[in-house]
Image (cartoon, rainbow, N blue to C red):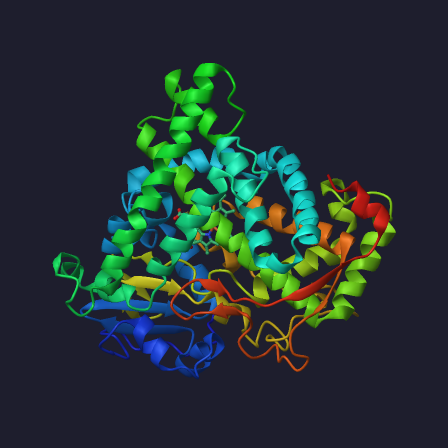
Length: 484
Ligand code: HEM
């Protein structure tokens, strides 16, 4: 076994038993940065919470050893009562049935693998140009425009529908689901219901039931996203007007009896629904972090634009054929994912059997959390980790060849199946925006990037977009006229 930079832990029982759920404990300690969790407690923290062990992996090496190396033992998910109430328990992200999960992953792998990525690229190029156009026509709603880009890509790939306007029914449907569901699942009080499932059956005045009510009110939005697109697409297939999409491919396979064994209409609905929910917000958060970072670092922006101008020129817009010739743009994409991971604590895994690691017992049924943000801030890997510095990935003399943060997309059998698509979406959006615009600050000059960013990184789960504004000035009239 590889030597660890942390001292071996004493064998279980839990080293640092604390009653109360991890999220609540951490939320109480406002001073604690993700990075400090590792420094304060070491590479791995073992807490116990109402009889359940909660393992926090602060160290990439340990997370890789356990979640990748022993993937079959750590690929479960907690059966969350809130996910059940909100209607997402049978979707890929929250599934804990191993056979169903494998089925979902097989289908997702076929449609979103690296080889398939190129077939989605025309959709992404078009959406990125639409994004630039919208940033010109609606400069006051930058965050909304970024979300619309992320949703438009996923809706077209999943359902074949092209979003043209903000009142498009698919756009509003996905937007509403995201805005009602994510606050429930990432609410600090949601863990109380996960740990005491009985709370869901208690009246709404009972302490601790707040999130149950919130989840019930979000349910109709999820039901609509389950139902509307499939009904619409089946109608289009009957009329012969359906456009190619994930849904059409799956429905046709089902009709021909060629679907994966065990695949049903419910599985298809569950997969296409969750793609919108988890894929859109994460992509939009990353893009928002990128815009913010560019405003903070005009020197990085200038370097990227010089690269684009040299390779692409001033008379056409960038596309994927330019990618290999734009290494600095790749660094900007990777640094955005490291500096502001969209899911700072990943999605918790559940251990499926007892395991011993470095002498420590990790009991079956433990909740295992990868502290992705902490891993990206590990000073033994990244110099000045709180600073946005794309050069860090370059070989000398500019950088030290630091590694990309692979943890941003999770681990093992649960690794994000949309990672190739997400990379491509973010890359084309970043490159198009930098080709077309100069980005500058419209917020206070003395913003300190080492303090919490406008993308609020909550210890309990997802990053959230906070309103901020940057000024986007078109750089070149010729390029502006090329936007569709
Ligand atoms: C910047 C963008 C994205 C980031 C940072 C991200 C990150 C993640 C992470 C950390 C996980 C949990 C992995 C684990 O449990 O170890 C995950 C799961 C997942 N992601 Fe993504 N994701 C992104 C975009 C997308 C997109 C665009 C899609 C859809 C095409 C997608 C679909 C999924 C699904 C379905 C799961 C659940 C996988 C499972 O439980 O088996 N994600 N993602």
